[in-house]
Image 1 (cartoon, helix red, strand yellow):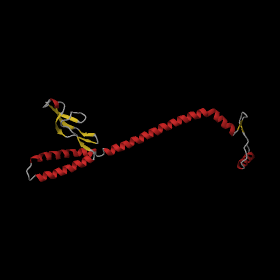
Image 2 (cartoon, one colour):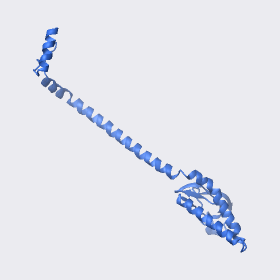
Image 3 (cartoon, one colour):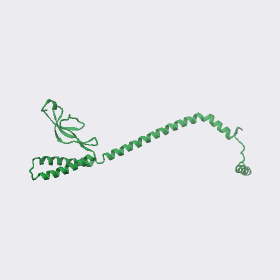
Image 4 (cartoon, helix red, strand yellow):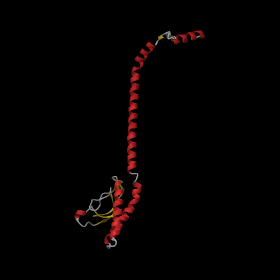
Length: 191
């Protein structure tokens, strides 16, 4: 195309005049209408296949993201639920010391009674705070031995046939935090 024909073509386009059909090497007229028909006929099946693939990819990606979102929400809840477990585990020996102190006060005089009452009040307050955080003491004595919750320290002959396989004595208390064992109960089992 020479310069003059380029200028004329630009003027026609600017004046919204129709552009003559472009001729290709095979002298076939290609107009916008012909082009649309050829696209519709030749690639309708291809487009629907591509649409199906893209829709499938979209659904899989959406499902994957939804699963990720649910999993992270669950992990956050679990993390906040068990965030205090480390500090509570470190407080369990203090709880054991309170129990031993209360047992030592069983044979006290009248003068030591006020001291015992003060320790009982502090112990009850301490227990209630830990219970609010989800700590629960395991029931052991008289229960059937279960390795999911108990650790057998020793076996002794059962005093009666009903106590075979049952817990006779508790050496160290076991605790659970929100239903999860944080310390196994150390027990004596009857044989």
